[in-house]
Length: 121
Image 1 (tube, rainbow, N blue to C red):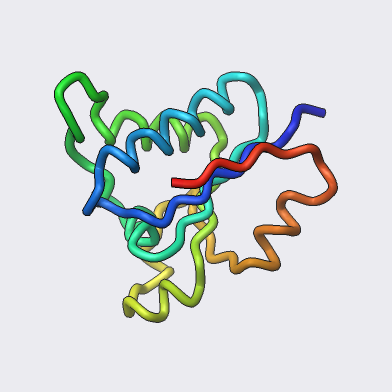
Image 2: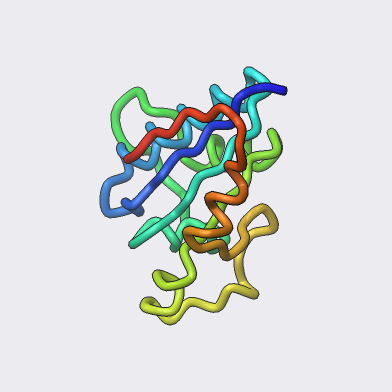
């Protein structure tokens, strides 16, 4: 079984370049056939809302909508911090289909005993 890849993303659209890099890394892992999740904390939890990951972060950067869609179509999972959701008053029933609320314990359970690479942005 391929190694798992977890990307910890604590930054939302206030830093679109960081979001872009996180989705580029996650997308590359999915292309290699590695089970991949992005654990969204802090402002990154808003990325679970439809239409939030939009725009182009910088000259030459790919559009975030495309990266977000490729991540979803590739089987990537968005694990969304429940404390951060509550702190921001978000409605998890409005989240995109590949997002689910998952705190630290479920995130670690997702990793399991597999070899894993963890990236943090």
